[in-house]
Image (cartoon, rainbow, N blue to C red):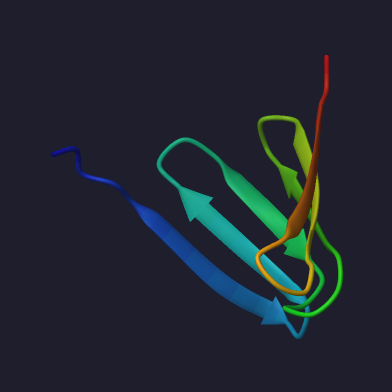
Length: 63
């Protein structure tokens, strides 16, 4: 089983810094409503929890 490393720090309400072994990312937005994540690898993700077992996620990768 591989060893993983992941840490999350809340900087401000609604702003979170996520660090793992290969990259870091910043998440803007709270638990309710849309969230925007910007990663050091160039990935940008917009996600939102919808009522019931549904969710929305859109990924955009820098070329």
